[in-house]
Amino acid sequence: MKGSYFLIILVERAKNVKTKRRIFSLQRGYYVYVGSAMNSLEKRVARHFRKDKKLHWHIDFLLKEADLLEAYLIPSEERLEERLSREVARFARGVEGFGASDLQGVHTNLYYFGEANPEKKLENLLSNLGLRWKRVKSEGDIMET
Image (cartoon, rainbow, N blue to C red; front, side, top):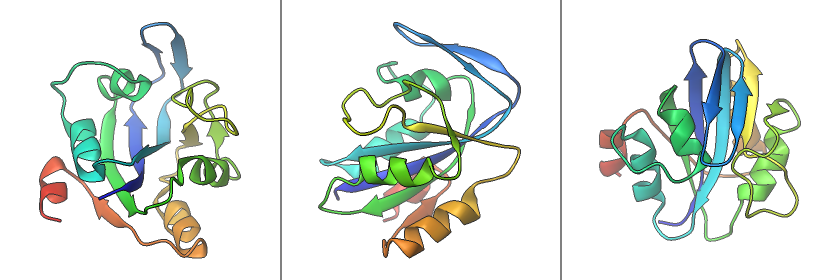
């Protein structure tokens, strides 16, 4: 399956997340990461749930130090990552430079929601765009699709 995804992440306390080339200072609270997988959506998101993996993308470094609570799989033949990222930016604060190096129109794919769980806002956004989605809370949930 091809498509995009949201990851809902909880950072328990403020911290600096060091990647290969940068350090991102993150506050305590909820974050949403916007991604895409135009080859295998299920495998990409399942990888994000695994703790034991090679650290490659910015999100890998963050997930090593934070809790991935759930993911939204958004099947689509069209690459929606940039559009979804712009939509999320309308109601959350972006973490500049995090995970959007391959995109033209956005400067981040990680958004801070503070203490409010972003679940309802994401579902409203997806409904308003007329998109289907599936919520998953573990790697096992993905394999059931």
